[in-house]
Image 1: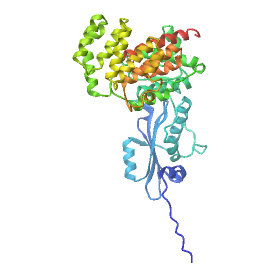
Image 2 (image 1 turned 60 degrees about the vertical axis):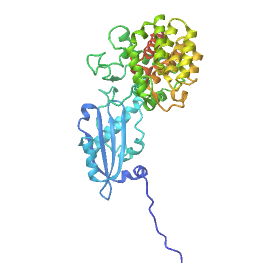
Image 3 (image 1 turned 120 degrees about the vertical axis):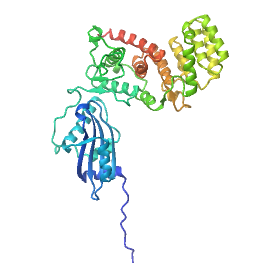
Image 4 (image 1 turned 120 degrees about the horizontal axis):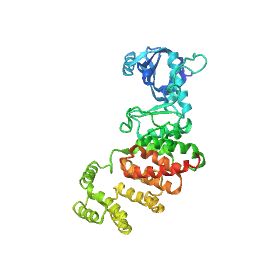
Length: 431
């Protein structure tokens, strides 16, 4: 006689349950942060009630101004107490589901028109919401600032992320068709929330506006992309550059060694007058400093520069070679020499020092992280390379990564100024 069969219900992953069955659960209360209308940024929560009395929650950070679903996550089969903790966390007021549905889906659609995709977990959490169809009544919600996309730089937005977002807006809505607010330029503007990129090019060229330097940069490079992006071959992946900055760059002006960095900074300040003199006398003084400080690679970099400035190129190459042999892990020196080679239009030599690669982490695969200075020098050198090649789109991609620290590194300032001169000249051909 055959044994009776026993049905065993296999455990279903929360993600799969949400995608296939969450909409069958009863809609519970919904919440939104109390200041969402004032700030344009909404922390929101939608609850679904299980038959056991627990809840599955969809949590969404919504930017109504531009970026749409910035972040989202879920909590599966949690208690009512945990639901209440989440409501407290987002400082939420209760809101009717239909209105919240219009806020979330409307922001997602508005962001999509601007070129922005929702957070990756939207692929799961959208199923905690009702299906976006005619059964949900349309409710008028304002997106952007009076309908105009407006990007407000967030406290966690890295410079590379800012540049990536601006490039996306330039590409999808066009320079002059969006607003950009930042409090990074207090010295350049009386109002810390002063509007800058997004002005008309001619207003700047005709002197009707008095922009800060960054605004000039964004306006001219944005206009250049608009005119020439489709007609030039791009070999550099701007998203990849932003990813390197976001995930592989750590604080450090010269290196990842905090003690070495502090020592270099201290020496740079102490001997600033010698480094700035740029003379045969200063060369002699730096030689003496190397004898007294044999473990500090900064003096090799400074001596290399001094030799270059007085035209002693053979001596410059010799001291650079010696410094790189003595300090093989001090990538800043190698990149310093590469940058100088690009300036001198010794492009093959410069690119060889970058290991013939346009991606910092692939050029130096033995490194898992880079200092800020190493990142800046690598892309400043690469920017000068593309300028020399006449490939201004790729040069702009490099300079996007440099603009945030325009005045912190001389290499960044020189590369961007050289680029802008060529961009302005090229734009003059079509404007």
